[in-house]
Length: 79
Image (cartoon, rainbow, N blue to C red; front, top):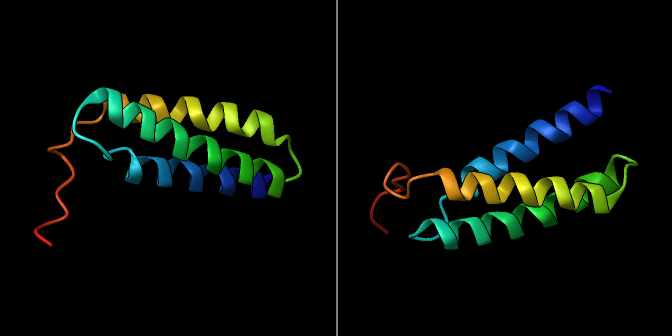
């Protein structure tokens, strides 16, 4: 159980960090959903769960996170 909690926490942390990809809510939702689906599938398979369920949950959370974030809140500085 603790292993799954750590995996889910890591997933949410990664999704939050990557949810700012893109400039408008649509592109951030799309990129967040894709990243979340891939990460969820990997975590689902690694923890002995279903990769399909992990992909669905990760994709939904990533898309929601991407759509709700503001690109101006994440400032990585100048390159």
